[in-house]
Length: 627
Ligand SMILES: [Zn+2]
Image 1 (cartoon, rainbow, N blue to C red):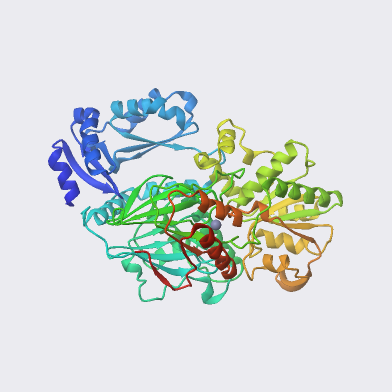
Image 2: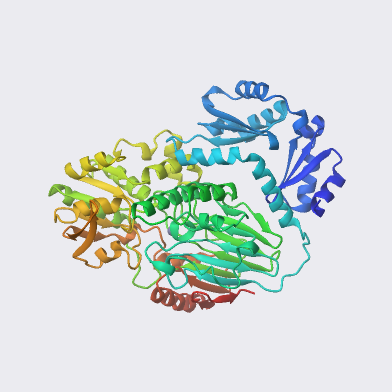
């Protein structure tokens, strides 16, 4: 047994079993009295060790599942609308899914406490989403079906984390290697190394590139998948998470840390990625089996939850305001020896969908920031202006009998656009016209409604009050080729479709149909990768070859092309500058990645001038010694 568990069981004689669930310690007891009243003893040990410890009842003293179910239904008020009760026997946990989780929890957890004390099972509460999400359901199924595997897996993770549990041990160095995403956007991937640990930060694919350029450099000597302790994913976009299932295909068996919504969305995007590959008659990089492996090995964390992921590395996710569940990752390395912040992608402004990124942290020595809109030319216009411009373009196009295509990343901006359009129709700024949603946006809407706690205050309240904007009758879902045909042949409308850069997906199908008529408009609201069809059209492409009904055909681009940068999910130059201006505490070093090279260099010199700290723009494959 690991020292820390021995230490605990020697102090608490009523504990019959002690093990890990990741970094958390779980104790089991067959003494009913101790289970009900032992809280203060547990708290003493928590204070001493500064670790999360949970006490559960031993399987031997648990009442039957039928009896417990009846008891739970008796205790919880019917207004909570329970949709499912699931038992995790191996962990003495009962999962209660309900439409109103707050009513299951009770004031300060009073109802949960009552359930725990009467049934001895440990209750966990989950929200049943307002829109049924197949992906969220199947992920939960994968996890339930693999309960026993998960229990062993999480215990092994804990054993590794606490293996050399020695708070006094001093670290000598910390290094960060850029495997991808340096001086470029796409394939974000970093290797963080200490004498004790190797951690991969993000695992992205560059969908706009081809050949080897798509992938991070996994073929370098210091990267060995067998030596990897953990992977951390900042958010679900393909350029940050798209290759994660591939790691599991290559034999990775360790844990990946991310937020709950990121896990659901990353799984959905990965499944879609397989689908797109088939449509392009290419062999997919991984299968749904590998996505399942990813889910089985994922440990979900909430924002602001401090967690050990290795003997010498502790991480905390902070809201980054970029997409549902997107996080900045704070690393506390070597018990405070070095604190490093990985910004991931972030937005330092309030949007309709999300709150702005967090900018104060416990401690920080070094930061790696994104620079998608990092140059001095990238001052984003105010949101309100951008929203008005979008409404104006839509109105003008509709008046002349045209259709509007808005290519969207499935995650993030499509929901933002929906909120803008819904509001404009409600307030009469926009005529009531059909708004069609195609591609996987609908599924991602469902995931948004499953995690209202990650949304902005306004949207969260709307969801809680049954005014869920994503199920508004303004929006119609396009699900079949026939329905798509109807949209193409029908009258003026707005179409929101993935992919955002016109690289495969429904948006390309609509472009083929809309491109030749100058009555129509296309509005770009998200970043267009170098080389993508979206970028080419943005830069004035007048003709392209597209596959129409299996035949290569020349298609003229006559439709009106608009770009609205002010709705970007990324921080503009002014936001990046004010993020560092407001950041507490001040870092000693700022590194820049995730941006075209000129933007990164421009941002580096501006940040240096104002903050007078070391700034650098590492190249791909470069290793930086953080300490
Ligand atoms: Zn992103």
